[in-house]
Image 1 (tube, rainbow, N blue to C red):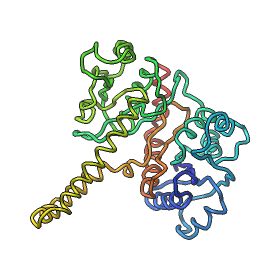
Image 2 (image 1 turned 30 degrees about the horizontal axis):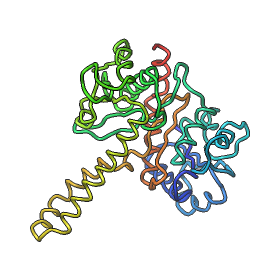
Image 3 (image 1 turned 60 degrees about the vertical axis):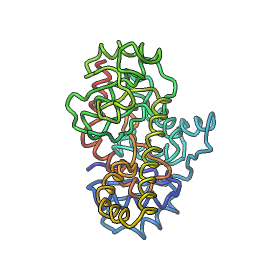
Image 4 (image 1 turned 90 degrees about the horizontal axis):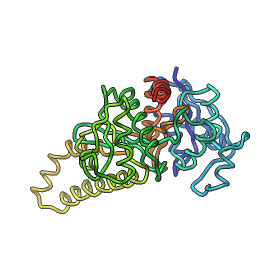
Length: 335
């Protein structure tokens, strides 16, 4: 049975939200769960929420990493062999074979640094990448990187493309996923020096590289995987989230402030709008994979609710069962 480790001290409302999400996942999916964190706070919550037949156990971690942990202090807490924070202990459980994947909605930077020191990079990968899924006109598109690596070299983008191709094929079932290099124009000569230097390198790979793709092309579903540096990817992500929130908010405002016919129309549209809202809701995704480390890790947002935690655990379980990690290892070794 698949075993998932959850950092129970990850969300902004830890451990309540994390434990509730874990219980929801254990009730819905066939898996074993390990909750890592302050046992004195976790156990009463777990006992009040769960039935005795749920496969959930607690591993005590007396410390936790927060948004205030940065620089040398963060590196020390991430790499120390006897680190007692929930991220370090949780990742060690995966590294030592006691679990199959790690999930956290804690400090993204802390999770990245801890993963690098405790799990290590896949052979041949210089920098791991965060790879969220963007909703598109035709379904979805994997975009990487979205913040882990603001400054990149061409070889980093090639690595992102290879890993993204594998993930899209194994996790989403895309046959020969189309890979696009994010640029300000579709022509081969367009883009920054990074984009122009990366383009010919991607042409030499075995992946299905179709060339440059503009931001609108990503949203229109022209590619299955969009490759970019972490700075550009993060701007794309934050802008997309803001636009989605703006559009749904404006529709709601127009319905509430409209006349009786507008309100009736809003009621008739409610089921359809609910579907759109679901497609744009980050909670339905839960967490994004950290690709390029030796084990499976998923990182969610600190503002995650219990549903998002449940879905993050589901995503980790599905990645384990799709044997994504083995395919990633094989792909990067062949490059």
